[in-house]
Amino acid sequence: MRPRLLLLLESAAVAAFAALLAVLAVRLFRGAPDWNQVPLLLLAALAGYLLADLASGLIRWFCDTFFREDTPVIGPVLIHPFREHHRDPAAMTRHGFLELTGNSCLGVLPFLALAVWKPWAPALDAGLLAFALALFATNLFHRWAHSTQVPPIVSWLQRRRVILPPGQHAVHHAAPNTKAYCVTSGWMNGILDRVLS
Image (cartoon, rainbow, N blue to C red; front, side, top):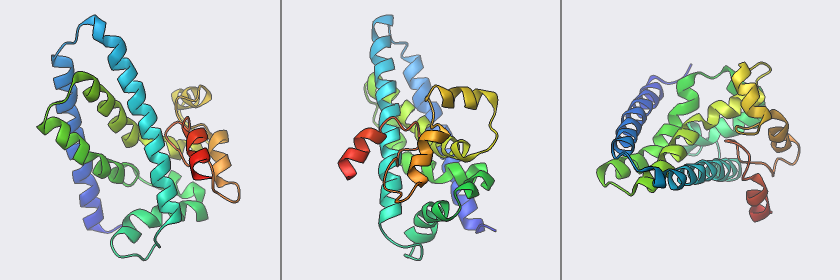
């Protein structure tokens, strides 16, 4: 049973994330960029997605490498889920939506709040939207990489490597567990593996 306070925090984080993301999306689309800006916005969105994949890897590496599960505050909330995942990789397939997305939302909130409070250029907004959405969905993608059955659309996206495919992620769970930390799409694993080795 998860603590009620943690459940409330995750619920509030997901709600605040959704509200801020909606404000940012409305502002981006209300600005109605002309067609000449569309390639730049798409490129910015792709950059945001790649950055989310890299961030997922760096966070995973950090949580797998530093601190302990009993470290005050950070241990039970952040470190424990990552270490539990190595003891029982399928455990995340039994976690609920809030448990999978709450921490990610909490981590992205400062960036969304800053962007909503102080408007950025449309390309930066597009990149942040993609970054935020990708990080929000990262643990869902990760869970699907461990699931024995997934919806057909998820399988289609995994086969095309748009989201993390199971075979690629299996590399991370093979001893010594020091590679393939990126769990959004896995596209940035080559770069991060070289940096961390």
